[in-house]
Image (cartoon, rainbow, N blue to C red):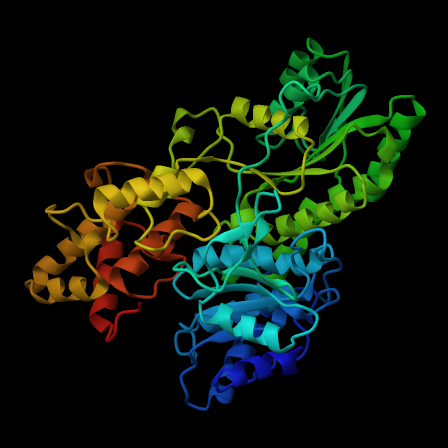
Length: 597
């Protein structure tokens, strides 16, 4: 595969610098503090320096995702994501040749393009999940993901070059009916694809499509019976799912609560009025023996499990380029092992439904969440199970709203917390329609999403959704393709990095921080969903006014686009107030010789 990839690049006229990592990723079992990742990244950065020989690298194509087997010291984890993390850490070093070059990550078998293709490999899929998270964190230098065929023949090599050159795009020719599925694409179009699978029949791009709706009047609504098992009632969505199961016909609810958590006595009393019996069991689904004993006892008592709803917990908040392999190793069992154990232990013929609740992290990436790798693994695992005729439905959720009324505020990319009642209704509709393994349920204000995108930067993943197309057409008609209202005065957020530097250069030194403070406050307000920049004070602490890992990276990405300065994902932690951040930006902008495009 390495030789074929090198040939593909050289046939296109590229000078290829081949850099091999030193040994296996994760040779040491104890890397909980991230020291091993830092050491591996430092070694790789050194090799990049020596291999480049003083030349500037114009693009990076990583084959590290092709690594197979298990990560040493971490059974059940794949080496591809760990090695990809090391590469991202190495490229984060400011003086590494090619540190700002577009990064493409190659896999083989990470996705399936339809029934004619082999099922996706869950271990390879982990790298795609991680790549989606990295793409959101480092959008300015991310190239994309490309899944290679088994044989890189002449046509496949030409298609690979087209992908890397941004020449794969255009209108999709067909869809496979799954959210986040792959569609056949041509080799022309204004919007280059960044998640592509190459197959002998062509190039396939990944996109979201509307989920199929249940047939009207032809099939009964989904119901359950007997015993329903909910694997973690302590998650934010757990109580809502428990009530839904009771109303859907479950006569016996078994609610699992991890050891050490509080017993949900108030919920149990409420459920007792809706269903015949409620049992709370202390069990960690990662513990196969304990889970087996519970399933066996239920079966022996004549109450076998008919419905399973497996919740996978909260994504880990660490950024991809700073996440140690140990976090991947912890996240995978927490989110994947429970589903796999239940699938092995339960009688498939007795099941009415096997529902796995994951997060949107594996579908479109979520900043700083290693869970994206685990959720992509889950989706691929479930697709294999469903392809074999076994029951399973995977639902990737957007964030759920809590009891706080402010939970309903949308972020600058239009993503709003899901009202729990709407979320469970959507789940019921999915089961009414027969289920699926790539179903996404999220509350998105697409007009807000389109308005917050720089011109021409609509993600290819969303481009085929009708509401996105309508919002884009309306926005273009109102504001033009550059996003500016004709005749309207512009501010620092409307200028290119070159224009911003020119404006700063024309101001007295004591007024320059004020201009950048205006930019920081405006961008912060937009990210938080506020219309007025004055809602963000110069000395407000970012964490106190509502910033978290996702919104922090959104702010960072917007400021990178505004200033042309490469900024760290930890920006608001290093500069905790808008005033401190404006001062830092001024220093960085003044040092920048050439704006980053």
